[in-house]
Length: 253
Image (cartoon, rainbow, N blue to C red; front, top):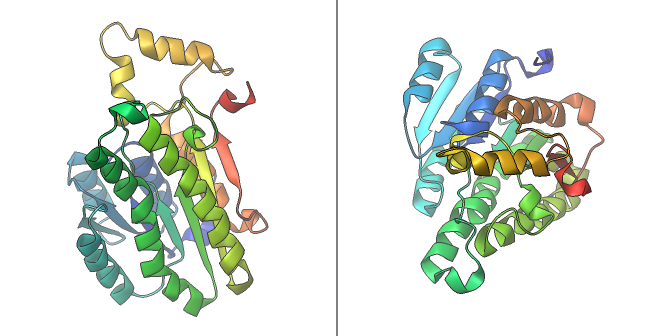
């Protein structure tokens, strides 16, 4: 059940990775609160089309490859022209097939880093000046339990997620006195299309992950979306530069 946050009515939210998984759940959550959402994703799928039909006046989709600097620059220009920016959700990311460093090519490393980490740097730098003009802005970056412990990804993914946490802490430290608030979410086992390989076949891998999670289950993307609403809300105004795990107790082990 999603709690109502009337404060988001009419506010402007920018979300990456909006076409599926956690990003789609976040998009739906903020649209249902009456927010105006600028959604970025590399694909325009049925989910995006449904958002457009149901929330036509408040939903704006930009088909964007966030790993490409030129594409992000164009998206920033369009968003900035629309007016205020209240919340930025850097959610999009890709996996690395759990490959250790000797099995990670330079091309794969760059792809993961550009998508998962550099895109946050570029999009944040593009939109932060508007937030500073407003003297208010909230940024929620998508980390992972792989940003806190090993084993949640391969060499590139784990390095990128650790980098996201460090970048977010420094971002908040530098700009909190100017009205900016930045935090991270660190999901664990979330039932999203990105993790569907774990459910393939007899689903043994998914079952093992659930058994290794103290909560003994996978979470739904809506649970991360609910945490996002709180972290972006005025109720969390004194929460700065932190990492909020949504992991069913994974990192407590």
